[in-house]
Image 1 (cartoon, rainbow, N blue to C red):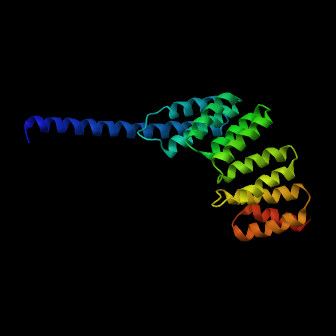
Image 2 (tube, rainbow, N blue to C red):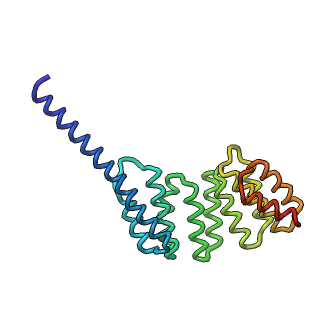
Image 3 (tube, helix red, strand yellow):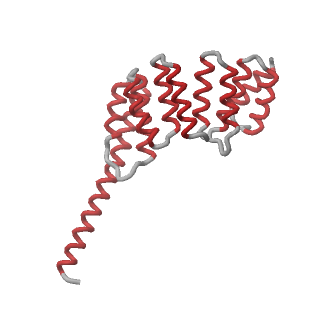
Length: 217
């Protein structure tokens, strides 16, 4: 191998190492900046939190990571708390493009914050159509309907979810079903499902609490 070729290879290796180092720095810097944002969020300092999360989300990383996803959700949360709902929706749209089911749920919450209930329900419908196994979206739609006291309609949404094979967040859906029957004053049915829930998830404290409550009805 000629000295010229060796020189080229060494230069390429140096460039690759430098690039990977730059990417690693971006990842670490993103995490540290996001941690500062979390501290502000916990203190309800939403503007400062947003600024940190926005800065963190702009950090360069070689690939899209779970950390990047989490940072963007935090950024959306800060914007939501600031009642900058349209800006938050823009963040959640980017996450929806990455097939993040929570993006649909939080986008729906933004429309609820704006008082646009029908638009919020439509977002849920879009999410269910795109990700039919995502149980959290069904629960969000149920919550919106329950807020309108449309418990029967909400229950139908949950039953539709439970018909899905390989349903994600099934535990959340099952607990919401108990709440639905309880809200309709169908305590016997709620009690039956509460017993099934506690049997399936014996370590869940809220399930045990709900069962104890229903035993007194």
